[in-house]
Image (tube, rainbow, N blue to C red; front, side):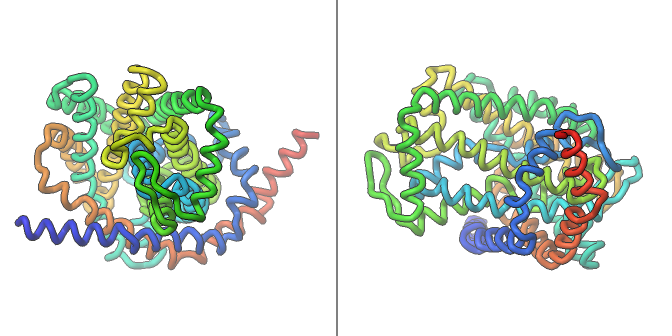
Length: 463
């Protein structure tokens, strides 16, 4: 068994190294070019159509939850431990320049996520309970006419949710134990009850939960990070110089930082940019497919904002807190990269800083568990129907407690393999359906019913 698990780890490390990073980056660049750099060309319009209307009660079209609720549900799953502990690792192994490449990849990732979300809305369906459901399993089956591949995706994600839930729950339990000295069993029961109470109510309750929970947890964390930056405002020009200069040239060792070559800088920046917002993974489209909208592209624009919030805002908040505080150059930093964010917050904000990081990590993970469980349930629904989906929901919720107490760790070893089973079919599908994405985009931005009508209305208001 031990030899078998070593093979599993070797395969996982290989897949989630250059192969998948290259695939995601290629996909982002490909769609950016195919869509004529729309995320830059229409950036102002995208912001006005999303943030500008986040709390508007005037919703156009059909759907189950509001566009903002769909956005926060998707963000709830993408924002996780990686935003707090993954960014310092990228800095320590790739240097400050990795942040520049993280930004670049996220900008291209916007086109990738826009594409999969637009397809998800186009091919969504109404289930027996009257809720709109969609995602890669639907556009693979209906758009590509490859039901076996859609089934393969659904099985992969349905299985992936179990080890992923356990790992996430375990990280919450360990954080609560270390900071608040709470027994993992107690943490497991509390998280199980919270997540269960939300997911049992379906996507409508999940949307009501995330639209309040996600802004609160994001503002708490980003606000604290911003305070650290303000307290060290004199170091910001130096940090910016480090980020941009080291993006194109090697950086020498200093203090606890061992130095990094340009190849490592690019690789770690690409990896963090790719993994932080999950563009191309195929999970976020499941949430966005439930949104009230009159055109697939309109909800696709919300997914652009999703990438912006997750990577450009939250990951950057972590990066600047770590860099301006100087903790990345302290002795032993390389050996303890996952704790650098906590150290930075604690040194600059006192004990409350460390508590904020731990609390943010717990909140991030709880929000991830809520939506992740729902994602798994939707795969079971696609494969077997609503009755089996409801059973799987309880299995996922129970796995939270199992993971919190450190049980069934054998399953954890298969997390990355099952995740690859999800990512590869999705990337194949959206690349093959690229013509449909282009058609949807052109229809939206040239039709007098959508973009042109919005622009005309805005001009009348301005006059």
